[in-house]
Length: 114
Length: 114
Image 1 (cartoon, rainbow over the protein chains, first blue to last red):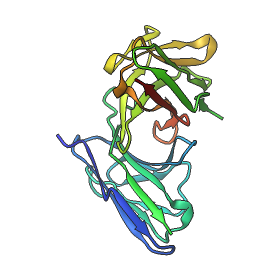
Image 2: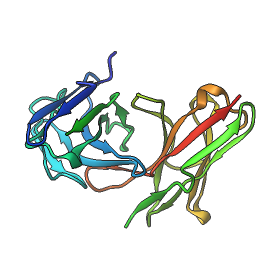
Image 3: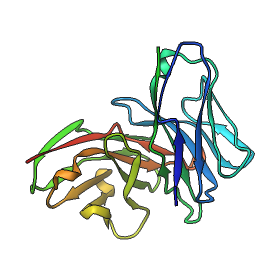
Image 4: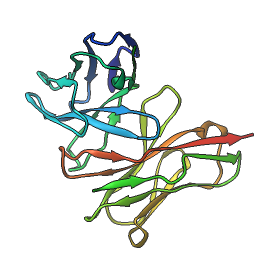
């Protein structure tokens, strides 16, 4: 059981480049989300999805797009990378079976924008 | 606005000593609270959660936490720390917005002296 898998683990981009961070889960969870982690700020929600075909913005969505065509996959796209997007990105998935969020996290993608 | 505060950015304890990590939340309704641990280069792992009922909850790796409504606190404790407990610890509260998102504190980095 792989849980939540993120790729790549590390990435360096030049300002203005685009890229997609991949996230896949094999737990059949309805809820998936993307967070960014910056020193001293904990994790902040970028985008989330409550099911296939449904996505919505979190606290810090600017500069990022998402889609959810299947239950398993939830890619995060950076359209035009900026140095302010240098961060560690975490994908998480949760089941609503208990009525509450019990999130499982991927190992993260460390992104540097130069 | 709802928030989670972890007052201690860094804590150092000796191996075998007891540990308490502080967490205060600001949330009007009955909160759903979590503690996560992040080892270096890893994703976040759930240590324990509080939804309702007994205010003292047990988690994995010998950790426990006590919910105190009067103090708006959910402090994490361990009676005897092991060197492998060195990590960053995050307190989080579940909010019924953004699809039941998690709001994280800034984290506390635990260092264990041998």
